[in-house]
Length: 415
Image (cartoon, rainbow, N blue to C red; front, side, top):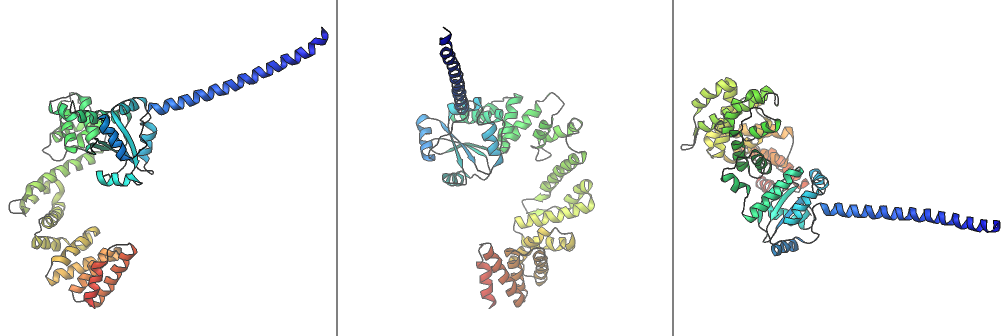
């Protein structure tokens, strides 16, 4: 019996080793299975994007009577990556978007994305498009959004598509729910400013609590365009409650800017296309002082008379304002010189414009300002200088692959 023990012991040890290895192997397989299952489940939780052409995506949307949700992104875009990481994978986001839309994502700087960007006028990323099966844009929004806002965006698009209970319809029926109004502000603040402004005004007209969060302060101030806006009265009545979110001088500057805009609007006589200068000075001096009012009046005359193409009045205002040339903003020099180059006939005006163009070129030579200076030299009889700067304009244009035909034409005239 003692002779049987060694083999039995070896077999027992072998079985134990085999059982341990088998258990470890099964444990690894089970862990791998769990990992794969969880990855698969996670992938299915979020938005499922179609991997096909835009044409096929539209056809599928039309067949299923759904909208296309299109994420217009770029590979370098930080907010796009944050949406991809933080929002698109969420289970409730995926559930809603997968049920209601045919989802697609395209890089707007590659392949079909370039055509889509051109067709729908996409200039910033991320931009979210909701498009019907015929390729018609239903709604458009942009920027990073937290999960709840992004869900509201989808719900609004789905409502607009069914023409039932859309935000605008609910708003027009008089809905005053604060959360509903805030969602309008968040979703439409950039895409439909006027709608968001109306929602902001209704929100604050019905606000009972006289305390303000920082977000509420931004929802209030961001939708004040004039002193006649309802939100301006709310702002004036609640300065103490708003105190602390912005410096006191910022509030004062904000108020002054709005009051000055009202004065500007009232000073312009659209019937005669003139500016009531006495009215402007009388009302603006108490707000920004005498010197500031005179400067503001000059700038108003320059901008307005240029806009309505009354060159004699524009010319006079520019010459008065530019008397103190060192006080003039350098960026204003070239536009004035260019206008005088094209329209002025008075020799003294052309001489003044030449000086402005020279100052612009001294700051930094560009194809544009060297051409303007060359043309003014030509008008003032300085042929050699005109040729020198026309050649510089051609050279700078070609370096930047810009159109140099105007400068080349000038060179031909100077031969």
